[in-house]
Image 1 (cartoon, rainbow, N blue to C red):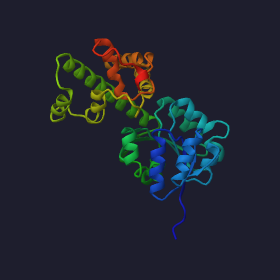
Image 2 (tube, helix red, strand yellow):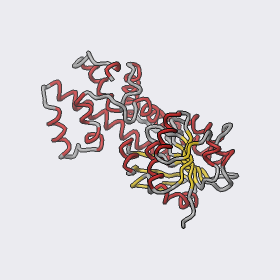
Image 3 (cartoon, rainbow, N blue to C red):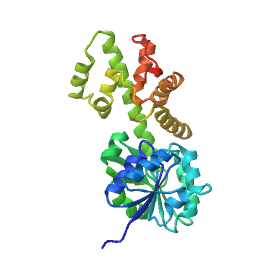
Length: 302
């Protein structure tokens, strides 16, 4: 009989919950913590062991996964009262799947280094990729720590790559998010122009998919843009946070990101109109408002 393998999981949101489910499907024991009783109950129904804190999630775990919205949440989960550092045995690997500031990841790696191994391992692929276990995972930190958890990460992602020292996973993720956000903006502009000319947007999408303009965003978010469906997958407010992290990193490095700043302004406009909890594709509503093509829609429709 194989010995039981236990991992902790902190953060059961739109990305964390399906990732934790994939670890359960792989036969692992998952000690799960979230502030939402509903999320805990849902994962318990799938076989997880709900616990009352990050420290308890870390007890007896060979690795603890973290999937939280932003830097302060991760810092609190790792180092705060009742946090992972309180319950984890020496040598436990903390795998941070969140998208946070690269500087915070580097600091956490140093602060946890006495007893624990910290890896920044942000993911890309959205809720669909999290459900299917096909995420792209960019891992920063020690080679030794990466080697210990790579087999576990293979249950979550199709592309799992060690990209460098601590913080480099977050650097790669910032680059990823700039490309994603500007691709969404490009789709919105193409659809707005086509609509102004009375074009069939569904037909346009099919034509674009067959050529050099084809993309993941066109495949997955294009239909929602065309149908006026703002329902949340990866939310506007989270994408804005990711773009902010990328532009802050660029400012520190003295690297101009004119396109990144422009798309951030559009996301800010979406936030100002109450779109924050709508999906990324709701950026098309900004072009509705700018062009006046469909000014009757607002966030209350979602």
